Length: 401
Image (tube, rainbow, N blue to C red; front, side, top):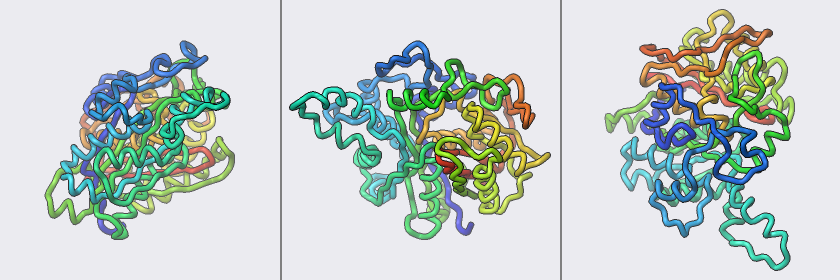
């Protein structure tokens, strides 16, 4: 890599808090966001737990100070809240926001609005609201976020399953590195819907209890919702302004093993390549990584293959690692950005967030994650993984300046 790309602002809303400070406090105090389904009707209410944001759509509108006549999707509202916090944290002016690029990631899009009118749509002569139809598209939430924050620059949407928002960070970084932008707002947002809960349940990978990443007795994942955004700025801007930052993007990679529609390859080849190429991109040796925020879904397939890939990369020098999904749930397209923010907070505050609910290692790997919060850690380089369906695997490295 040539000139550095810095992170000058972060924003986040999830099941453990409506902003970065609340989320950090929950992480430090071991408070998870796992709860019963509350904000939409489901046959799985009281049976399958989820990590939902603890606000109704009406309350989310209040958090945005938005006109409720706007009829925004829940995905849009979550993204608007997180993006607003990120640009405030970066202390961007209205002109800087207007001229920035915006890259937002999502997988669900406006499915919540689609579900609201779908049954009525089947009735003869039903006239659906145009906004409900338009809101279905993934790009609609990106447009809504851009309008809300006052952005008029280049915008685009990334949808590559669970690696979506790491890929948005990667794309934003590349735009700056190659001189196409000086500042890019990047991140992702996804809301819970019946479609996602039913879909993951049909794959038989949802745990009816709290998920147990990297545990021998893991039963699946807990699905969640949320949003996170980061403000990326060029090295020239940071030097010129002297503004604070959380570190810089030192390396990244995306690798697709295309082994299966939903499962990763048994030897973890895609995960291995993503981490290997990220290290090469950062010009770092494996033993220089101080912490790994693993993808760690709690599913039988993911944790085994990610563990195999980590052992291939790091051997006997495997750094401390943990999955933070027992706190936030698996937030699909928002996962990469949420865990990027957590990784930056870990590096900034010198802490390693524990892997909750772990008791016994997987037989094939014998890997043991961090199970108690670690404080006063000197974290110079942090690796974060996000692996998506179809084998779209991404890894990113954040480093301390």
